[in-house]
Amino acid sequence: MSYTVAKGNQRVDPDEVKVSGKALEGVVDLRSDTVTRPTDEMRRAMAAAEVGDDVYGEDPTVNRLEKRAAEIFGKEAALFVPTGCMGNLISIKIWTHHGNEVICEERSHVNLYELASMSAIAGCMPRGARGEDGILTWEEIKAAIRPKIYYDSQTALVCLENTSNMAGGTIYPTEQVNEICDNAHKIGLKVHLDGARIFNAATALGDHVAVTTKKVDSVMFCLSKGLGAPVGSMVAGTKAFIEKARIYRKMFGGGMRQAGVIAAAGLIALEKSPARLHVDHENAKLLAEGIAEIPGLKIDPKKVRSNIVIFDCAKTGMTAVELCDAVHAHGVWAQDTALYSVRVVTHCDVHRAGCERALEVLREVVTKTRKAGA
Image 1 (cartoon, helix red, strand yellow):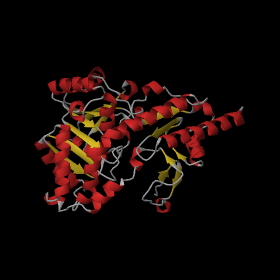
Image 2: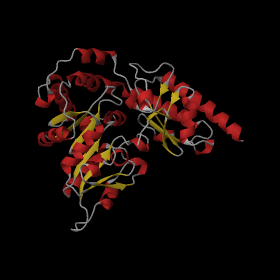
Image 3: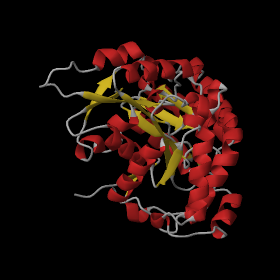
Image 4: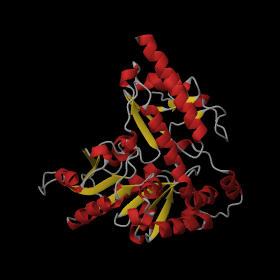
């Protein structure tokens, strides 16, 4: 069996993908905020990074990154991991036993986009619950908790995602997270936060990440999305949690040696990138408002609060794949997420002018297709 990767929506062989140090000239790449390139400052820091063997705990740059992440989040300790998927899997593995259930929103990343690793590796079953705009309430979670019957799979963990990617970057209010944590803890459940884009959530809320994550038992966040680092994520929690996390990181193949080379970029991302995320949010709002004005496309701009915009194209006469392919030909890259759903994500490598161009291309493509089908 062979697999392909998605380049825009042109499915290509991995061997044909050209790797570039900079964003492709003339392309507005809105597929994801994972496509960001490291800044010149990050590259200089990577070249000059002081390194050691991190498996032995001897890489000073990694140690600084972990210490700083723990300080920023108000947690006892933190651990540098290669990917957000690994960070989530490690956390799930620590808080559960084989045969347990994990309650998560049905559109969540841990449920849909992590290769069923919680089942295949952690031995758990996801129990999906539907939340309005991807945001679960305690009542919805409580309704999904398994009864204490010996032949039922027992609920062990609640996993929240903030922001909620596939719901359009929607955000958990801090008080709602706290309510969920308080009630979960009363009945012996742990709460893990997939905070891949938690800095986007905190920016939109006007809160500090330490406030938004105060009561969760563990949190994972990405350095390589909106923060712009080339690779890496962090998990944070108690010292005891991180001691176990270090063991599972090694077990899952995530132990790295002279990782300070990439941790150096992560430090800059952590310290400097959050301050500019509001620009991405403003650009996302610009896109949402412009898309809402294009006949055939459907979105409620009021619901766009971070850097993710998901819109419906059912009335254009095109599927999401067809629409993405059409705009791809004009240098605008978007991502289909369902038969008639398209996602665009703003980030530091796409400025306002690029968003305006994307709107022009969308308008031109949709208008032409609707006229042809009239």
